[in-house]
Length: 514
Image (tube, rainbow, N blue to C red; front, side, top):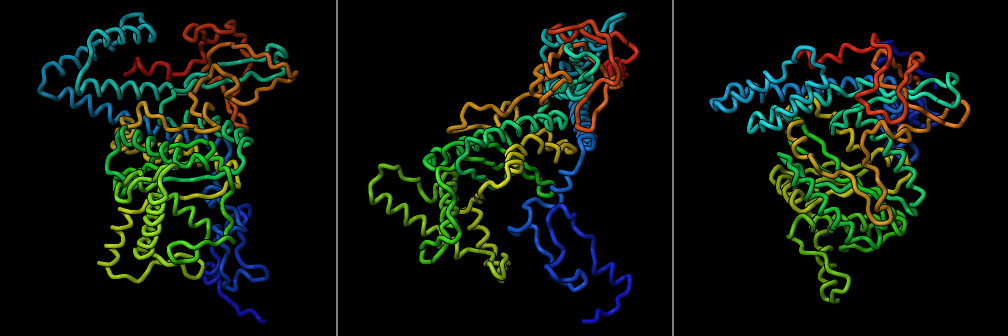
C-alpha cells in the first residue's frame, strides 16, 4: 500500500517522543508502522515491565546524581525546619508573658561564645544551662526545632577515614560520612533504606510463596501518634486472623500527604510468606449468585475482614471453634456485602478496562457514600521481582521528601511519628531487624569493603571534612590523598582530627556566626 505524504508538522504531532527502549515497551504492534496510528502497548500488560517510565528513569541515575538530589532535598528540609524554629522564637519574644520573654533573652545571651571558648565547650555550657532552666510553652517548641535544625546542619559535614593496614597505599582510604539520623533527613534515609533493602532481599530465601499486599484506610485531616498506634494494632489483628495463610513476613506503615486536600493517607505494605500460592485465574467459583474467579473471592474476603476491624456494621469475624450457625451467618453476611457492593458500583469493566458508569449526580453521590463507609481497598499480588518488592516495603523511609517543603506538614508529621515504630516483622520472620540506624562505626553496614590483598584489616585514621573526600562512580566516599593520621582504633570521636588543619571546612564555624 502506498503511503501518503505528510508534512513535518503532522509528523511532529503524530509521532510523539518514544518511551525508552529499555522499559520493554513497543510503540506499535509487530509489523505495524509508527505512522499507521496503531495503538501502543501499555506498560500495564503482562508482556511488559511492571515499572513505570518514571521508575525506569530513576533506576538509570548514578549514585552521584542521587546524592545531589538528596542533598538538595536535605537543604530544603533544613530551611523548612528553620522557618518553624524562627516562628516559635518570634512568637516567644512577642508574647506578653514576661517569663517567656526573659527566658529567651537569657538563652540568647548564654549562646554567645566566651573568649577563647571552643564550640564543644560552648555546647556543653549551653546544655548545662538549659537543664538548669527548663523551658516551657513556646520556648520549649523553639528549642526543640532549633535542635532539629542543628542536627540536620551537622549531617555529613564530617567523614571518618579508614585505611587498609594490611596493604597500605595499594588500597584507597575509605571515608564513611557521619549522618544525623533525623527521621526525615533524605541523606540518611536513602542510606538506611539501601541497607534495609539488602537485608530484606536476603530473607527471600525463606519465602515459599511470596505475596505483596497493601492495606488502606480513608484519608484523615490531621495526623497524630495514635493514628500509627491504631493502624499497627489493626494490622496485627488482621495478620493474627489469617495466620494459617500468612506464615511470616514484614510490614511497614507508609504515610503520604495530599497537598490539594491537605489530608494524610496512612496505609500498610505487607510482604508475606503464604502457606499456599494465590488461586489461578482459570479457577472460578460461585459467589453471591455469580461465577467469579477464585482470586477475586480471596481478595474480597480479605477486604471484608479488613473492613470489620474498622467498622462494627458487619460484626466480628467468628472464631475457629464457633458453632455451625455462627459460621453460616458469617458466610451470609459476606455474600450480602458482596451483593451490595455490586449494586453500589460506580465503574464497569468493558473492553479490557474499567470505565465510569453513566449515573446521575444523586445516584453517584449515594453510591460513593456507601463505598466510603463499607469498603476498604486491599491490593494483593504475587511477588515476581524481589528488588521492586523490597523497594515498596521500604518506601516509608524516604516518603518524607514529598512534603519536606511544607512547614505545616513537617511539623504535624514529626510530632506524630516521634517514637512510632513503622516497620515490624511477624511469624517466621519475627526477630529479623530491618529498621536500623545510621551508624558509621559498623563497617559492615556500608557494604563489602575489600582491600587489594583480601585481608580487610581496616584501621581508623581520623575525622575529615568536605574538601578532603570525593565520591566515586559507585557512590563510595574516599579520601582524595593519603593522610598520615596518628589516631587509631576506638579513640573517642571528639579527640580525633586530621593533622592538616587547613582542610577544615568553613561550615565548622556555623555556630559561631549565628
